Image (cartoon, rainbow, N blue to C red; front, side):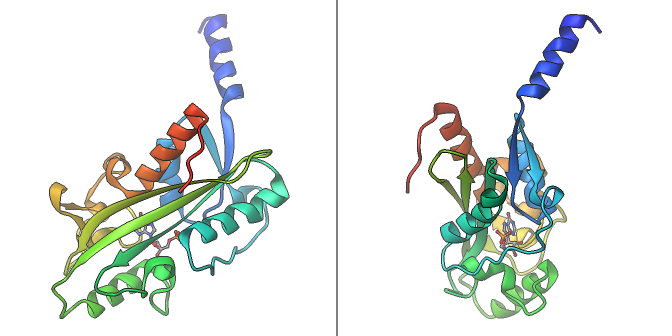
Length: 211
Ligand code: IMP
């Protein structure tokens, strides 16, 4: 490899910006890293001995902020966190910001099983996923981005990609659940993909998105 090429590659890596990602979910981190290719995402647990960050607020936005801010206050480096959840029309107030704690066990499998159980006699299956990202950058005010995707809850799980409620979340136009999509496909259609696209656009244009 020529000297120039080595310089270009070294330059590229030196310039690569680092963002701390405040998430314990490897599936989520993978989706972010896949879309934010020109940033190096560092899971907060690799640099901080924090066991658990409580997320007990009433809104996605407040939870996303608390997660990002807890780590930002200590590290003072760019930090990104999101809070996401499933909103099911027939079960208002049951999921949303409580999506993770839906079942007692709080595992993906138990959550999906409980959802199927609660909807077993219900024909109205409309649902949506929502995500709100909070990005904190030193010297800047907090930035927020959101994304949604509409779908419906199937009567039986399909697919084994993704995580969480993906196997039950069916997108009609695509005839697939999120768990039947590759990560590249999910990263086109998902709630998180839309929020990340808003973030990229904002960072690139240095505009501020307020909602
Ligand atoms: P959190 O945003 O990581 O707190 O996620 C809240 C709950 O929603 C957890 O049960 C997640 O598994 C679920 N969830 C969040 N995003 C997704 C997604 O993209 N697909 C499926 N489930 C999700």
